[in-house]
Image (cartoon, rainbow, N blue to C red):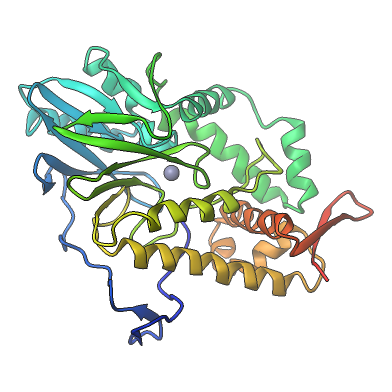
Length: 368
Ligand SMILES: [Zn+2]
């Protein structure tokens, strides 16, 4: 899931109040060079040789941006969409259209989530085995998720969900998500070229530096081109929605929010006027403003969670207070994962404590 809008931002110098009451920073406002996104198998050239394609997803978040990068000898493709028929149809149309007559010479994945690598194995086959660049952890974790989907949730996983007060419907939501994996992903390419933080890559005639960050995924890769002031951001920085930061049954004690907030410093260090190519939504400029909005958005959530913890509560109860609408609309498991990420962050920073009640459930309380 990707969370709600993070429109409000702390007022700083030259802050102003927008019509909806949100405070916006006006010295580096967010601007969108393209008001429209590409439709069907259309592409839009967002920088010389970088084509933007929009692949449909069968989720609430209904699309992912994929980047088609022109090489002298073919194409580099970044990210893929899920393995649903609509996404395959868009790719087939791209192969008949803009990609016709030249080979795929390289595949790159920003991270291992379904919407980014679901079709990477299929595209790899189509390319005759072009090199596939991804971080090791993301390749392994996506491969593991496909494998896990063959078996039901294990008792340890259910125990974890019970210990945080999850109801049967929410647990069933996790089980269901697991079962659906096979419809959304084909097996990943069987070999990789490993991306690490700082790896320098040349594609599309430009030099890119790989920025590996945690938070949204364990080893998410963004790509920075200093010469042309371009950032292929993946999901790490999105223009309107806040990337999902969640704790899942595979790593119950994780604190991804601390990693995510730390990663934002790396983007603060890039030029304010960089053109950002995110995996969802529209390309934009105004990176620093967006980073402050994202940080502030999480700050608000943390403060609200602290307030809710005045009454010692399970993570699931806190999720109902923090995200009443998503819970009511059947997004309880996302709300739970995101709430637990915020609770674990508060624990790391000494702002919350956790105790076990008589029924083996964890209660979070505000630290005194
Ligand atoms: Zn993602």
